[in-house]
Length: 169
Image 1 (tube, rainbow, N blue to C red):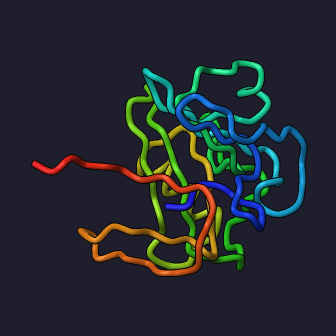
Image 2: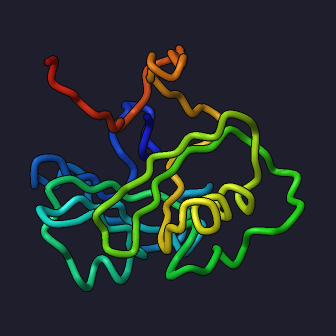
């Protein structure tokens, strides 16, 4: 699953950390597109938990992330939907994102199976999954490879991705 906006050379826009190495710097200001729709945020995996945090709060706290990706907008922050999301919005795309449980022990990576609004997507994380914090990764060009779910979305090369490797038994 694609997890961040990216530049034409497919390098990440905003913070990107891989194996504790910062590959791309944190962007603290508003900007164009969904990424720059503040508040945006960072998804971080530490040794102990999953974290979704607003960008400036993340910059202050600077948790020790093994992996991190900045994206935007935040879908849900402390149980509250992003203030710019409108009920009944006509802006609908296939969307993906991540939400985390209150204790940070579970992360839900979600891709919609149809076009949805930001408002509906955010409500799914908060009301459907109980995620107090959730971050939008992508829309429009969202792709998912999950053969066990019957998903093998094809498309052009993209930027930063997340995946799960499961050892063979």
